[in-house]
Length: 77
Image (tube, rainbow, N blue to C red; front, top):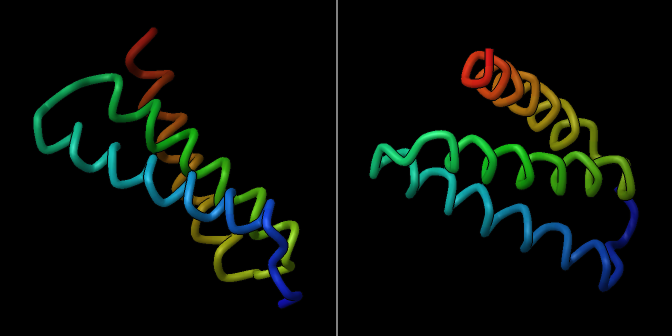
C-alpha cells in the first residue's frame, strides 16, 4: 500500500462519514436516503482502495457497492 496523500485522507474520511450516516439512516428506517449515503461512501472507499492499491479495502467496498446498488435498483423498479 502506498503512502496516502491529503486527497486520499479526504476520500477516507468522506467515505467513513457517509457510511456512518448510512448506518444511522438505516437505524431510523430512512429509505432510500440510507442506500444513497452507503453508495457514495462506498464509492469513496473504492476510489481510495484503487489509489493506494489496497486490495482488501477495494474488494470489501466493491462488494458492498454492488449490494447497495441492488438496493437502489429494487427501490426504483
